[in-house]
Image (cartoon, rainbow over the protein chains, first blue to last red):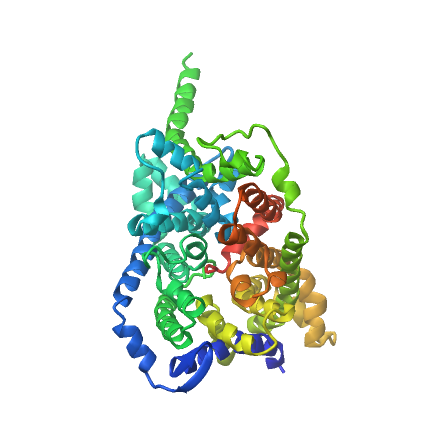
Length: 280
Length: 286
């Protein structure tokens, strides 16, 4: 009778996750045209995926985007959490300030930066022009577009890392810190000898949480560059979207989706390995 | 003199120690605030004011043009839709997750743990992976562009985190209360309804806040699974200005963003603690 209580949840998950995953695998094994499933084609769409000369550059983009955002968001999140944890006055205001980007939706974060960086009317452009550089046309060249999208994603996501770190920091026993203060240790000393070792597991799980977020990020890229210019910001997730809704290539999109799913499974396994109650 | 000097030194010392922290806070403010201030400023400009260059940070003249222009039936529909999706998802997710979280906490078995791990792992599958299949399945049937389908999809995405969070709450309830109730002849359903439910009210509130913010802020579900404009969400409403905009739409766009952000901001300011608890319980979102 106990199973009756989990039946509705299981049904919803079968319908929204298990079914579609099987369907995706099924369509990847068939020819498709405009979402119509044709005849069985074996591993053809995977052969097409792995022989695609664009694939290495898409994987490279995914790596640059994910690791780039991680390298910024992780230290920013940790530093913000430590600053906030040691703050005695204006704590609520500073926390709200730090959290502000993340309170906004991804679509908002992407579009407000788009408007801020607008080459014709934006204030960023006014600054660069007055300094003698041209307008800030960051989304028109491949490298600067990728950098911009990565920075925006880091900007939006660092508060999430901060919250996870903050939760862990508050569990550091007070005696541990007091003992160091008696020994006359400075802030840096305290950070290296107590905070970092104490946070080791949290750091790993924050890394995994952020990487999963970045690998599946579609919205911020979709509202700013749609993967362009010339595919320079097309991560694997964005490629799934573009293949599906731009090129109407269902089996190609499905094959890429399976690849993305495999990457995600690896990350999930790491996440479960380092699972902490509050962070996963 | 001899007493006050060390105290003053200590105060000076703590002041100096606070300098790097405040330097960091000011640096963060200069990174976080400009685009936000720029949007607020734009929302208060006239149509031609938004296209001035070099740009002015203080609108001159102030104008409510952007906000007044938002009152169209299309825009109201976006907000109503998002409210329906959020409200429906809160009700459905709580209705199916509370019983699951309850039995998963109180009736532990290997198979139950396997099922819960399965749910957790599945809820971490990238949304875009299942969306392409859902889209191509829905588009062939009459299921696309329907409120129930949208609500079920939103619910499925947040269920894993909801169950995890509720389990932590139920775990903290002493089993003895339930045992006593069972001796008095309460059935399992009655225990859940009469004893557990009132005790986990704070948890339910936190989860409801989390679900509301998730659905309100989500862009992708509305983009993929709502193909007609009358089913789109608030976030689609924002991005619409960028993708289909012509003329001077920036004032409207900025005002729309400000209005769309107000519900989330007020919930955050009113329930900071629950808000943070609910949002960090799950880890992955987006």
